[in-house]
Amino acid sequence: MAKMAASVVETGEDAFRKIFKFYKRRHPPPDFGDVIDFSKCVTNDKIVPVKLDPAAVSDGDAAKVGLHPVKDWRAFNLQGYPGFIFITNPFLRGSQPFWIRQCLKTYPLKPNVCNLDMHMSSADTQDIWAKSVPNLSFPSVGKREPRTLLERLRWVTLGYHYNWNSKTYSANHYTPFPTELHLLSSQIATACGFTGFNAEAGILNYYRSDSSLGIHVDESELDHSRPLLSFSFGQSAIFLLGGTHRQDAPTAMYMHSGDVMVMSGQSRLLYHAVPRIVPAHQEEALVESELRSWQGGAIVEQVSEEDWAVCSRYIRSSRINMTVRQVLGQGQSFPETPSLHQTEDEKNMKRRRYSDSPNIEETL
Ligand code: SIN
Image 1 (cartoon, rainbow, N blue to C red):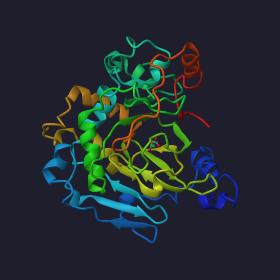
Image 2 (cartoon, helix red, strand yellow; image 1 turned 135 degrees about the vertical axis):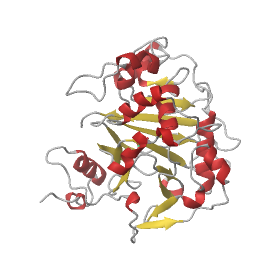
Image 3 (tube, protein in one colour; image 1 turned 90 degrees about the horizontal axis):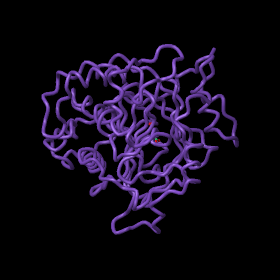
Image 4 (cartoon, rainbow, N blue to C red; image 1 turned 180 degrees about the vertical axis):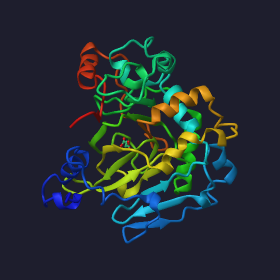
């Protein structure tokens, strides 16, 4: 019989790494029995339903960014993780295609930064979508290397562009944060009690079915009193939420398409990781047939059939995650302004360490 995750850990060791490897293992596949599935409505002593303030965001404002009224959201706290809020897919039927299209077509556009910039000119990565669409063949067949830029896209940064090398943000590497994503983020944050949330930086991760995201803490932002928001689209994932030490065994949970996670308070600086992408259930896969149920609105406009054909093929085998962060507290500024121009050494170092996947690992 397959072992459960809890049984692989002994006290004192790097429990997070052990459980990460447990869920990442292919042969034999792990037992997923311990993985919390918030979409299944089960509440127990660990999963606590939370009522968000339905008046915090008007129904009209929620609908503008493609969200159900807050009173209809299903939100949960996790026992032992104060400040962690999980909202199961609050998106109105038919609105996810817009956000998926933004992630694949709009957000990778220059001046935003992506992994492909590390070894290609900005002219070559200017419009990844336009360059890729005529030659797309995903889902990849067998072990074939992805050919198009869209298939090779692993991350995009928005707003204050995260520097993977120095693990910092800086005042002089900033481009305007997308307005509609700012609006979506501030409505989620407001509903969770964080009024005045200022979305200043975004990191988008693009996962193939064999990708994983290593164990880390998001601590580069200068104000940790502001929440970190996470939005998932496409295939599902196993997300591990640990403690402040690697010895703390993490809790495993599924993240399905449309799910939103808020890490705040004492849960803002916890270790976390994504050891595995898992196929979306039939209900979650419904996003594929959603297009025609959206009439379009001022912000979340209807995606063309042509664009959706590309997006839906992409998410059939991939997952997209957007994390949105406020970097600076009110009235706060960056401690120093690093040089605007990277030295050749810095460029080479980046190339070596982050040639294609900064923190997304294809294999362990
Ligand atoms: C992250 O921690 O940066 C992303 C997590 C995820 O992909 O769900």
